[in-house]
Length: 443
Image (cartoon, rainbow, N blue to C red; front, side, top):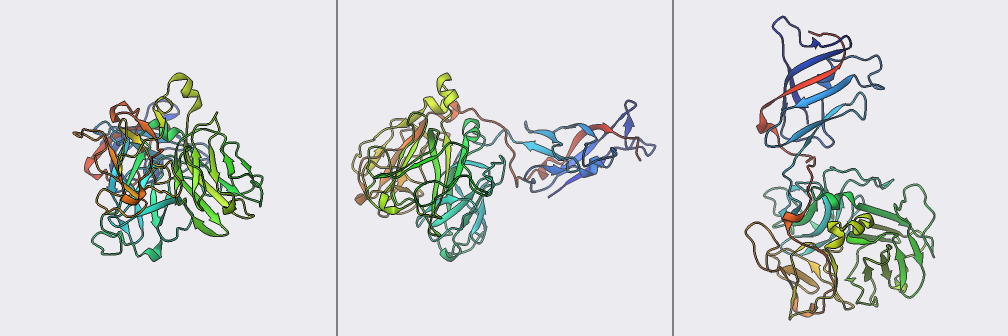
């Protein structure tokens, strides 16, 4: 959207004051509108009071101060001369959001905050499998775009997180709409306010050639050293240990698919569509595939989005490293009772199992469980909650669980202020500002 800038007048018609031979200063107010722009708000109306001979090469503004309420802060971004912006940082964003209700237009919705990791997406009727943003979803899937450039893989923090559902699923997220599955569509996620998680977001896009990963080419990337080994099962090594996998997307001859079941290292891949994940393995996590699935067929593509385990912090006792848990939890009837509060807990929208052909796809608290589904029965740690969270699985999905999770209390998380695209700051009214830059006194 835009901001409204009102520059002070000294009474004689002058709007800027010279403070040295080269610099002038202007003061006034900035009024924000109802939707904060992704990447910051243009300050072109402030820039018009400064001067440089080459404004798209050298920015003339050198200082901007904005007085914002409630602990919010503003910073000046001059990384693109000629398109200077003011960025607003929100220090109050929660690190974890549990079952945010989605609202949007038709089959597209946006999360309230930029996401770092998706736990699960579900309606009151069924869960939806997360896939990499920019890939076209098919039935039962949701493409979640979290700021990755789909050509280079470069990640831009603070990008508004979008969720795109399969059009033919008939989902309408418009407020008051009655489209299929629209009622109670929710998403649980970790926000980019959780600093250590946001700092360790990564993804890879791998092109297969029939027996291996094709050498890096335009549009394919891997920030780590990935390798492929044909065996039984086939093995993909990622070149880094992990603490979470957000999504695993496979283009199988052009057909998009997601894991049928995610297994922990106590399981063995024997069913088509299943994957086994070994999160921490001497600095190079592994994903195992059934050889008969032929994931490495020529032209097939894998997109894997994950949170890497920060090795440097592991030595220093970093929170993600020291609180990472990846152990078998014996089933107690239909229940999976965690030993402590899980802050991050999902792998590709599932709780991994320790047996083959058993999926635990996470669905919302109000869904009636179907085969291969699971849900929370006790609240996750939120204000005024108590007790140990418990996962309940469908009766025919009983098996030992093998989840990977971060254990702890919300108050232990190191948070950071972040930008929130789409936020409504119009209630602040006129906020005082002061700016200094090259130029001459202006009227």
